View 1: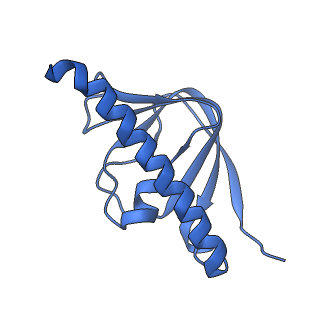
View 2 (view 1 turned 180 degrees about the horizontal axis):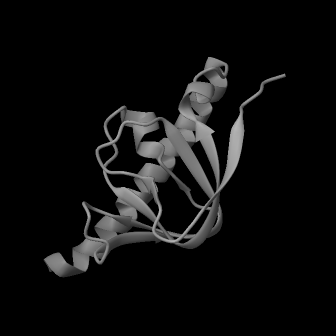
Length: 122
């Protein structure tokens, strides 16, 4: 039996779940509420708004680079938080499968971003 410890956590309006530049090893699944993805401290320029069911924090799992954006709660939010140290104790085949899914998610996000930018380049 494989055990992956997760924590269900409640956050409040304006809490930072992820801070740009940090190197923490956490993956989040949004159970309730919304979060905004923003660069730097300017919370008025929202890059994306994530909703229930969305997964975030995946970039660090793929690249091991510092966090690329801030993720800030909009109202009360409940998430499942998966600690990366636990993630890497999984059997390699399962870890690889999850990483494949995360890469697919990143490709989808890149496609969406390109489609949103393309009309401005014409």
